[in-house]
View (tube, rainbow, N blue to C red):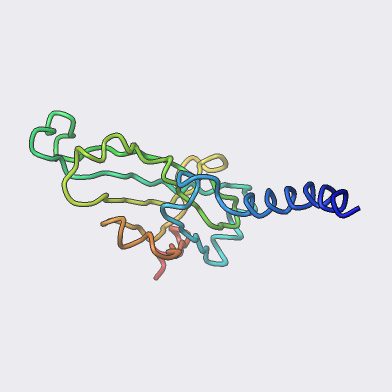
Amino acid sequence: MKRSYLFSLIPVLFIIGCAQRNTEPKTLQEKPLMQLQVDLSPQAREALLKGNESIIVSASWYGWALLGKENAADEVGKIDLGRPQILLPPSGGIARFTPSTLKSERLNWIKGGIQVNVNVYSARHHWPDNILACDVIDGALSEYNRKTEVLKCLLISEQQSR
């Protein structure tokens, strides 16, 4: 009797174990490297929603070339570590960049830490030109990967009238 009771618990324990494991990212490659909240002014949100226009959050990972790796660098000495883009809905939201977007095989080509430049702009599906003026990130990744950074966006026309 006790043995059949124990055997009936095995599937339950297995399911609970799987459910607990599935709440966490499976690998380091799935955990956010950087997380950004895109906040829109009321006018920007309204315009994007009316035009059903998406938002692009574009990151550029880079580092400064080590001595001997200059041939892999661009004209100013930067090693490209990746240029991922995340598409957000017209209402804004959170962009999560994972380590899988980083060309990790090039990390031993750079001195110092990973640098990041982030720009946010309208996706140009509805309008031919970008209509957003947003905060920018540019600096050491270590400055931005500890918490969710907030990038505020206005319409370019709002910024020009200030």
